[in-house]
Every structure is written in structure tokens, then in C-alpha cells.
Image (tube, rainbow over all chains, first blue to last red; front, side, top):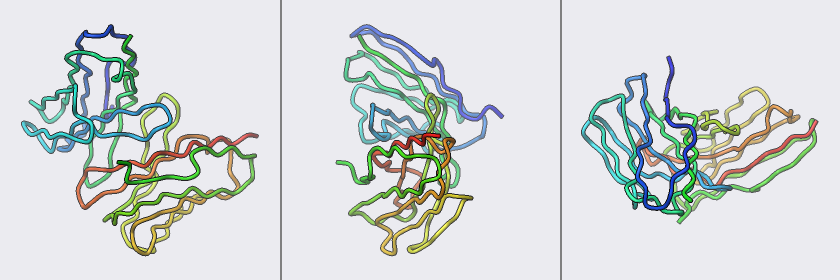
Length: 110
Length: 110
């Protein structure tokens, strides 16, 4: 099993550009999450989903959007990239309180 | 507002030394987890504690959940260079959503 797969691993965007961070899991987990991790900090929850068709805001949702059309996929969309969104983004899925993380996407906004 | 504070923020020690990392909150959690994260990777679950006063051991790592379920500690005996990484505590309020702590970055020198 691949677990949680995130693409791309690295990306540089210009201010105002948009992009989608992809996340897919092959464990048939209902719960999926997007976090951002800034230098020297823990993880902050952006959005989460408890199943296909259901999404909800986390602690820092502004500037982001998500969708969950299938159990496997949970893409994160940045519409108008801003320097404050420079961070490492982690996607996770969970079953019974144990979260499984992808290896992250390192995003720089210049 | 950061609900989970970890201390120390950084820890640099020699191989063979013992250390303790603390995770403190003013909130009561239904369960608390410890994750370890290596550079370029996502966090990996080490342990989950659910009962106040619970102690769990994982080889040289000992985890304790406070009696009031507001705090936790991670003790490492005879640290090895392979223990180097970012240690994150995360609390749950009886859901699959987690609140992550601020993180403790551990460096163990040979």
C-alpha cells in the first residue's frame, strides 16, 4: 500500500497565481485532513473531511478551498497565492484516531 | 491560540543521555498522541494514551498521560542519534480531529 500520496513535493508560485495540491489515499479512510506547518511550529489544521461530499473548516481556512468527490482524493486549492501561504503542507487520513501523513508539499510564494 | 505547549522547544544532547519532553494544556483531552517527524517526511504516530495516569513504554521511550488528562510527558532513556527529530504531541476531544503542540526539536550527537 502506498498510504497517503501528495503531489507535487515542491512548488514555487508567484503572488496571485493559483494551484491545487493533490492528495490521495489507498486505505479507504473516511477522514482526511490538510495541515500547514510553518518553521519551528506544529501543524495547524486548514480543512478536514469526514467522508465523500463533506468538508469543514479547520483553524486556518482563509485563502484555501477543498473538495471531496471521492473517498480517495482530497485536493487543496489556493486561488490567489500570497507570501503568507509559504509553508509545508501535509495531507493526512485517519481511522480510529490514528492519522497517517503524506510526505508533504513544500510551497514557496515569491 | 495554541492550546498545547511543548517544552523545551529545542534540545541538543550527547548520545547516552536521558531527556524528558513536556506537553501541557489548560484543556482536558480525551486522548493524547505523540508523533515523531524526520526532515522531509510527515509525522509518524508513536503512541496514543487515553486514561489519566496511563504510562506506556516503547523500547527506550516512556510516555505518561497526566492524571487530569491535561498534560503528558515523553522520557527517552539513553538517547541515540537515531532519536533525532521533531517530537509533536497532539490532543483529541473525542473526535478524529487533533490539536497539535508546538513541537520539540531533538538533536542527539554521537
